[in-house]
Image (cartoon, rainbow, N blue to C red):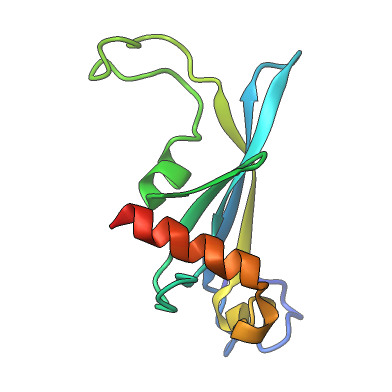
Length: 134
């Protein structure tokens, strides 16, 4: 790979594919604002499927969001002309940090969580939220 240092270990064999794990966002301007994060759990905590599941962590509010919202809504710039109500106005939410995990290291960085490691209150909360979604 032309971008790897010539002395990088396993340069020819290494898997240098990465997965976006989180997007840290600042909403506001240089003088004031608010911070929140989108985090890809890489696994649905309820169904245990290995599909990417994104959550928005905003103070005490944690909600599931679509990947498109987590990734595409944090570019700043201006709203498009398709958004008639806000066309031409500036967006004030901008990603200021992206966190990637090397794909071959996912299991080490985000090891599976045993059910015994999760508090019963949290399990109950997840079950209640799942019932509300149905």
